[in-house]
Image (tube, rainbow, N blue to C red):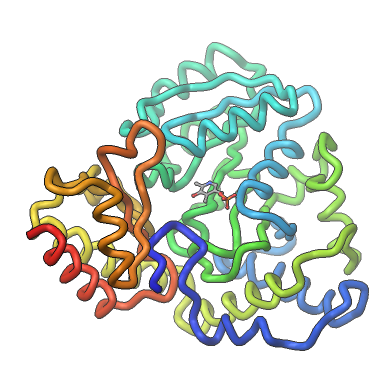
Length: 354
Ligand SMILES: *Cc1c(COP(=O)(O)O)cnc(C)c1O
């Protein structure tokens, strides 16, 4: 079965085999070597300077990393502004509410891009806001939000960005040079690891002022202990094995730019192939990520018919979320997917539509 959903991904044999390495006690030096290598390699994906940045690992899915980042990096009496244009932005608002973090929201329609002018207006009207949370790749629609445009607005005002890069880290470019204080992501999307390991990449100076609002996901404590080659709880050792192997494989294959290029070819192959079969993209290609794209369901098929027909051929596609579920379907090209796989997928579409 090939997974065309946005994680977990189809694994390479190399990563799958890494799960069979020796059993490890998480209190032994071998585990801390593994943890150290994962942390160093995560910074290397974007060539980040370890004097300024640190990678904090945790056991959990991508949401754990996002929650940990929000709970720690909005200061104890700080105020957060959340830019929403999909399910994942809305999730950050729920997290902020859960922790009773003072927050404001800029809501956009799910098909809209974040508006930097609205961001500037809200920040200018409320100087208490010190942090802005935004989704890099809004997986709801496949939109790649323009981080640069939001970063410019934040930078001019000394406001820090907290970025959910769960479905972009490792594939899409990210400029860490501006107002970004932290980025949250996971092992099992564009990095091609397995579910169970998530992480936050944070500026060390932001982490130094971290709040402690949660017990298990306390980012400041996780960072402190990991810096001492320690861990507070039992990590998902096997997921860490897979993450390290996936990061080595990424590096061997040319790193993030090469992964971006590979995904871009596949995404264009899907877009062009579906267009030929009368299936339109939900967003223009230049506003979409290379990781996942949303398409309009053909009139002749329900999502269930399309999904089940393709599954019988060995492909798992992904439904639209919430209000978009009867209009859209999604295809992600993350994971171990090649051009010949997409060719077979397109033949499957042709067979189902006619
Ligand atoms: C997948 C995803 C998440 C996290 O989902 P989990 O199921 O917790 O891994 C968060 N944000 C975005 C943008 C995502 O695509």
